[in-house]
Image 1 (spheres, rainbow, N blue to C red):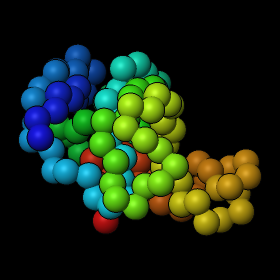
Image 2: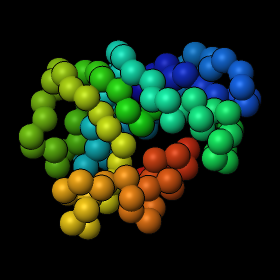
Image 3: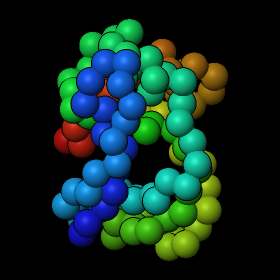
Image 4: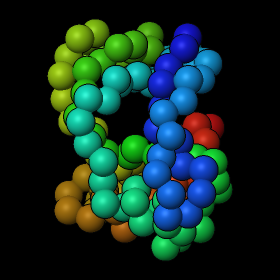
Length: 117
């Protein structure tokens, strides 16, 4: 499927809107069409406050509409509106209570520039 994404190609430079072919969602994935949101951390990643590969599509937080759902998804439906937040492991007590951004693979899971395995 064709999607548009804001792509970071260079440090301290504007993002460019580009069209890409995107694989279909996996069984445990949701595809959200972002309609609002850019986290300040995305700008820090663009400007290499932490080294991320470039070019890269950022956007780990925002608000949007569910466009596709995987077969294993049961609590979300097509067309649902909602907010997205960064990925966390969901297994440590802190991830489920009050410190989800302090797990050992937070950076790799949110800013590696690739799909989770």
